[in-house]
Length: 106
Length: 459
Image (cartoon, rainbow over all chains, first blue to last red; front, side, top):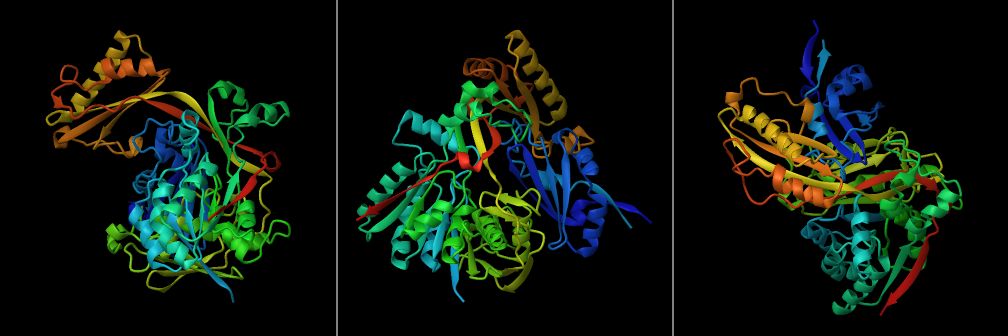
């Protein structure tokens, strides 16, 4: 039976910035979780999850070697650290935010 | 097989000085990198230099050097830094004074300049070089032309290598990429060059540089694994022990320090600010971060193998053009239970009405409820029952066309004064309004930037 869990039950995350790009890494606790992340963490789902926080395109890359999922989000920081009105100027909390995302597991 | 060790003595402007000192004191290193520049830094430093031509370098550099030079000069550790900012020559002048003051043995300083292209912008535009904004896609930089305050390219390690060849004990540069502070010495020591480049090995050097360049961000800082940090109040700085073939590197940290160096903390750093991990672009080359293997080989020792590159360095250099965008003002008011959320909404309405009364139209405005959604914004769930909310700090941040309007807004419209706020409290003085520097990231052809190296003997 499918059920929903939050990413915090499957993975760790770290985020940083370059200009107006928010750069997010999601690191699964194990290989099983990595397979779930590969299936569930798609550009569309990430973009929908972040709502107005992320205005531009979202790219997702797989790093089988670590394993980890890289998420690169454009137009995602309210103008970039120097211009943004957001409290989290460099998007360091984007990592903890994505841990709220719900995904389906068996 | 030849091996060298490189330590990161500073990962940012503001690095706690004790961490820098303990690295130099406790580790026997061939090189220490002092990284001191963030994206906004060059615009800030250019502003200082415009006001006073004897400024424009990062002041922390001198504080760091005062603490580490007594160790590095004894141990023969060479120092590579980008803390010269917009004025590497003046930084070298100050360092020379410091060397004499500390009665240290003679040193050779290599000074790298030339990545500042502020005065070449019009010439580049007339040659048909488009300075397209990489963030927004805007093609015409002329829309901000009159407001530009600084323009710098992120340059690679070519002249770091040259300075080391000429016997430099220290290299002081401006906007050399953080990464090149480590790629430079690795390439010099192992005989790698851009004349006859081995892009695979250069990719490995870039990977190693990336892992250590942000200081304690890889030794357990900014980490999911904060609970297993040993003595995070005594964080260690990262060290890379690199073998000549570049087939492996050991990543470790300041001896007898706190923090941690584990496969997981290295992983955290490999997914950090690297964009497409198959093509981590640096001015010196391209690293592929999707092949490497990590292995814990001892306490606080991680072995990295199978590092790859393979592609030639980009023909363009990434640049940041800083420009005066607007003025920002912020205010904070704290609203307490009961009905804290209703009060926060009411307060926002009051501020917006005040703007109308003063006929001020902010260019952009937002209200955050710190304690509810300050960190996660739209993603944070709202409390179901506002009675469970003890308090909210409402932060209002807004941008205005000029300083006068920002100050007027701050004084008359945004202040969380007793008169304007619902029942709540205010604290301290609101921060003064500040200028907002926008950044216009762009690419220019590599050959447009002509760097120069000056060697200075300090006796």
